[in-house]
Image 1 (cartoon, rainbow, N blue to C red):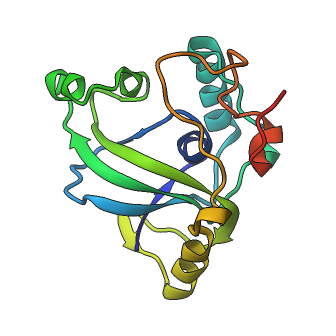
Image 2: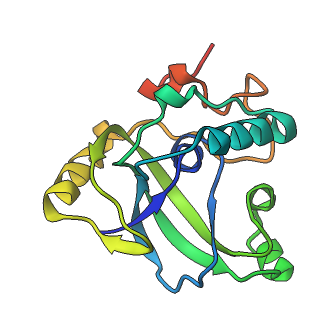
Length: 180
């Protein structure tokens, strides 16, 4: 199983929220299953910048910094495409306007689908680029991918969620329950 390390809170926004594109400076030719690894660190400035952007532009609330998981596999997705910098026509052809909210048009956009959050993050050290998950970590991840063990995912849609704001990103959703 391949994995991609992603800094928080971006990893959280992928597995528990509406983010379905990961921006990178390099072209991604890989397609297929990928474990989403939450990197080991995040600065206060990184968190504050993303939290402000989410609240100001998208009406999303992130959980507090202490509720985020670090240095662990937090979910699994499929890499289905990679949009090169500036390829607006290709992005439009994907037919998902929500991707535009997260794509940095100066970078390659790794497009993700079938995102599944793990109910229990699996501790693991990460690496740069795509890397192979150690066999014991993969075993623990695959055990959680059994149908009864998968945490509920929140669908990406052009319409707002029922509560109008959270996309299940409040800290109360860490255990899979939607906030009231």
